[in-house]
Each structure stands twice: as structure tokens, then as C-alpha cells.
Image (cartoon, rainbow, N blue to C red; front, side, top):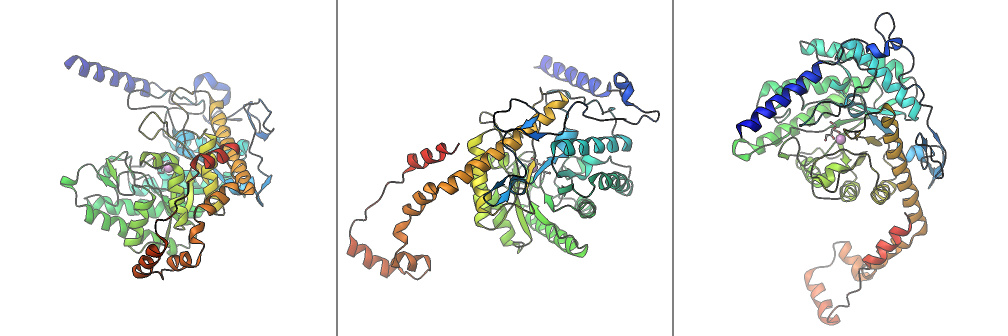
Length: 475
Ligand code: XUL
Ligand code: CO
């Protein structure tokens, strides 16, 4: 046992050493890319062209096979159904580190520091990436894009400096799909942010969200997200759950008031997740979050950002949580990723399963699209994928998977036989008595009379295998 602990401590030292051995200036082996003032010159992704649609027979990994932005499907352009977004934190801050190992990704433009100069360089890389991919939206946490200062004032001014550059680089086409505050990484948030037992932390989190909403608004963001990573508990033995939930509701209420005060018209979104990092997160899933919003009178002020891997972590399918949000008028955005069927945690993988994507798109079509929401790729490269071009390949793959899902879902809707199967299944309610039941006008005495008059009811087949056959034929 002692030997194992020693080994762990030694390997942690190695991780620490590797992390600190990263050069602190413009990387020496890429000297020609560094200008006199240490600034990056030229392209960040040389040799990667603007990604184009080449159709399903293309073998080019740097081309779309299914996503054809301008093509019209069911009356809307693909780009308007899909409204893709790149997640800054995974694509530009993901290092490949995991609880057992050091970073594996050293993007050539990184100099190993978290300086403002580095933050600006990274921002330029982000916009070259978006432009080459042909994606008009990006998502960020405040702390991904700019470094901490010594005080909140200094941190805010760092953020302002980087945001000013982002605004310039956005031009008139690119906008944030959403912004958010990172309220889970810093040790001050170890007990939560809005649900922390410490009043000072609650106030600090409020100040951070206030600023993050301001910069999202300034950048023309269309939505603002609340993901309560540490808004939950490790044990109920030391937790006043009722008080914490009341605090969370007050916090969100204050966010609504501030949004209105600054004239931010974007949608406020809550992103459910059952656990990780807390053992139990309050926004467990769509239904739990819906009940929370209803209890505190916040319905109408928030919609939901459903993340597929979070839905599966909570024991549902992504389709289930999308439908729960949709039928309650709360489907606002999708964090497009997927989990691994063999592991239990949030692996944040790019979606590759065409069947899953088709079900996702059935919900999105029924919702009439997601705008002003969209599909944010809250997804990361595997730790072992270390080439710069892998960033492109992963996004192209994720976009093509959803584009294929859209095409398949449209086929299913145009064909109509799945909808007909479902309609037929409930057709006994398309009768006079069915109408009375659905209108809430059938009492138990009336139903008892009918049950006695009719005798044993006939019960039809659910036709599950036929439904699956029809679904499969669209893939
Ligand atoms: C974490 C997660 C977050 C949110 C934004 O699981 O999904 O990245 O999307 O804070
Ligand atoms: Co997410």
C-alpha cells in the first residue's frame, strides 16, 4: 500500500515536471512563426483549406460529406436547422490531461503560459478555425478566454481586453451562441457558487455572472448558459438542501432582473447534469429542472440546454430529455456530444452514431428548430488524438453526423409511416369519449358505465419492431 502511494506521489511529480517544462515563449521549433515581439505570425492552421461540401462519395477527411450549409431540407437551410458552434474550452483549452496523466496536446501556438498575450493569440486561432470550418458561432466560459488577475477588478479588466479583440475578430458574421461563467474550477467554489454555504462566495459568483452576462451581451451573444457544476452536494448529512435550492432560485431570479436591466434579449438556458463533479447536482435532468423552475416561478424566463452525454448520465436517452424539454416548451439549445456506452462518466465525445443523431433531429424538427439556440460541440478530442488536423476532423465528423441525422429525420417525416403508426396506436382516443377524457370532462362514474357496457377491452399490438424497422430504413 505504502509503495503504491509512493508511486502515485512520484508520478504526480512527473506530471508536475512535464506541465512546467513547457516553454514560456513562442515555441523555439516554430521560430519562423514568431515575430520580433514574440507574436505569432501567419496562419495557425497552415495547409488546412476552407472546408467545403464534397458529398457522400468523397474520401477527403477535410470535407463535408453530408453537411451542405445552403441546402434546403423541409423548408429551411441546413445551416439554419443546425446552427453549429465551437466550444472554446475543449477546442482551445483542452490539453488531454486526465486524473491519471499529463497533457498530451501541445498546439504549436501555445507557449505554456496563461498570459494575456497568449489569450489573444489563442483567440486569433479560434477565429481562423471558425472561418476555415465555416461555423459562425462559438461558446465560451469567462475564464477560458482570459486569465485571472490578482483581484476581481483585475480579472474583469483582463477579460475586457480579450473580449475587445474577440469583438474585432468576430466581424459582422460570427457571434457567440452563448457565454457562461466558470463557477466550478476555482477553489472558492468548492461548496458551490449560488448554493455555497458561504455568503461571500454567493456574492462573488453573482459578480462573476454579472460580468459574464455583460460581455456576452457586448459580443452579441444569443443565449447565456447556467451550468451548475458544483451546485449540488456530496452528502445530505451536512447540507441544507432546501436552503441551497432557495438560494439558487434567488440567484437565477437576480440574473433575470439584471438581464432585463442591461437590455440583453438572449435566452437564459439551464444545462441539466445529474452529477460530476458533485455526487448529486440539483439540475439532475430536464424534468427535475423543469420542476425547480415551476416551483420558484421562473418558468418563462429560462429554457434548457440539453447535453446528450448528461442525459445518458442521468439514465435517460438524449432523445428522452430532448422530448421532455420540447413538450414543455423548454427546448432551447443542445450541447452536441455523446458518451461511451461502456463507461459511466461524461466523456464528451463528438457524436458519431447516426441513429442517435436521427432521433435528436426528430425532436429538433418537431420543435421547429432551435433558434436562437443551436448545436454547441461540447465535445473534445480523445487524449490520444494529438494532431492539429484532428480538431478539424472531429468537428467535421460531428457536423456530418448531425447533418445525416437531419436528412434521415426529414425522410421519416416525409414518408409519414412512423407518425401514422403512432397516430393509429392512440386512435381509440379519437372518438367522442376519447375527446371527453382529453378535455377533462369524463368522470369515473361515466367511465365505469362504459367499462361495464363494453366488457373486456380489445388491446392492440404496440408494433415496436415495425416502428424500429421503419426507423432503420431511414438510416
Ligand atoms: C460540463 C459542461 C459544461 C457546460 C458549460 O459537463 O457540459 O462545459 O456546458 O459550463
Ligand atoms: Co455542456
